[in-house]
Every structure is written in C-alpha cells, then in structure tokens.
Length: 327
Image (cartoon, rainbow, N blue to C red; front, side, top):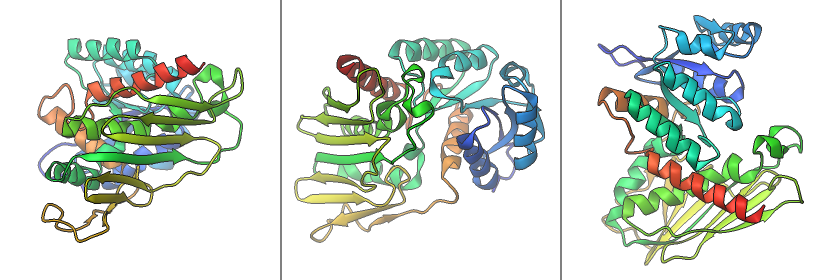
C-alpha cells in the first residue's frame, strides 16, 4: 500500500517486545508512507530472531547501533516506559525523529526537556497515542463543533492481568494510571482542546495497597464538561465510551481506543450528523500514526495537530500529580 512516486519513511524499532511486533506488522502490511527496516534489542540474538520472524533487513544488538544507522530516519521507542526518556534523548542526539509509545515519559519535566531538545535539533518527537490518528476519530473531531457543546464523557480502559511483571512493579512505574489511564485522559483532553472547553483538574481515586501500584484509577472532572474516566489492570471495564450534550448522545462502540464505529443515540440525528461513522481499519491500526508522523515530516512540522506536545504534557501532568497526591 505504499504511495507511488514517494519513498516511504524508513523506521527502526527500539525494543523487541509484543507491541513492537504489532507496530511492525501494521506498518509493513498497511502503511502508505512508512516502512520498518530495522529492529534493535539489547542483544544481537533477540534482534536477529525478531528480524527473521518479521522479514526485516537490519537487526542491531544495541540501541546505539540503531541510533548510528544511516538506513533509519525515524525510531519507534517500544521499551518499557521508565526507559523511554534516556532512549528518546539518545535517538534525538543521533539525529533521529522519534515516536514513543505511551506514556511518553512519567515526569512532565522530562517531557519538557525532550521537546526542547527535539526543537533545538529540528526533529519531530511525538507520543504514539494511536486512537487520535484513527480515521473514525478524525471524523468525529471534525463533526463535534457542529453540535451543542458536550456536557459529559464516560470512558474507561481496563482488563484483568496476571498479577506479575512490570505492570505490578512500583520500581518500574507500573499501575493502572500509567499503563492505560492515559487513554481516557487523552480522549477528554482532546475534546476540550478541539472545542475550546476548560479542562480543570481531576479528582483522582486509586485502589492500591501501601507500597504497591494502583490497581484501578478513577479520574473525575467536575466542570461544565464533566467526565468519569477509569483504568484498571485487575478488572475488565466497559469497552464502549459515551459522549453526551444537550439533546444528543454518541456511543463510541467496541474498543473505543481503537475507534471504528461511532453511533448516534436516541432521537433522529440532526443535519450535523448525517450518518453514523463507520470507518474500519486494517490490522491493529498503528499504521495510521506512522503515516501521520510521515505527513508531519513531509510538511516540516515539529509538532502535530493530532498529537500535540501540549496535550501529552497535560495528560502526564494529571497522572503525575494524581499519583503523587495519593502516594
């Protein structure tokens, strides 16, 4: 599906885990302007196995080798999030554009420093919040200004995970808020930003034992645009999201963080809502963020209209402050 007459953006991946595999498959099977050509891991054998499995021509046994590769233009950082900040910096210093898996970092000060470095070097740095790049989400954000302002959002992301590993390790910034809470917070932040609505500060409620990670997190915004946002690593939460305003209600159906079907609820829809939004994607949809990244570079942008630095900063600030207050 590569665009004719234009060379695809050449990606390398730092980290050889499950999410790296999903990104590689989505991009190489479905992207129109991007191609993964390299993988880097902490040891050569793991990189070689990944490259053999997914048909990549280049495999590096260190992240520095990836940073120095002349064949790679942009790097997708897919290691665990406590390791994001130093790896982003390493890639930026080597002249690579960077797309980093969520959460981008876990401290606002780290994000500010990295954004400043990227601007200084003329490089693009974005957080990989793929939901904002799905065609259905873009269509929703284009239509929403035609409706009365929303008054309430309900969205959650949660699934029961085996109680072992990085998600349950306080030393690795585990827990529900960092792992999946950033998704509904991003959704709320985007609606506020696009519609010019005040966000306020969330009331944060955590379920955790002393010295352990938050197993569930709830973020409540008590503003004219209210929100009830949930996250969990021990419970399966509702996969639909609801957005309501005066005289209208919308359902983002199924896995709302992979939005493909958005339905009008209740009475007949107004002219501003000519039909339900149904825009299915191929694969897991990560090709859309890779293509958007390439589009930003083609237009020489150092920030994104869909994944702006300011919204990453806002969400990081909500989570960081909420965990600090309750910790």
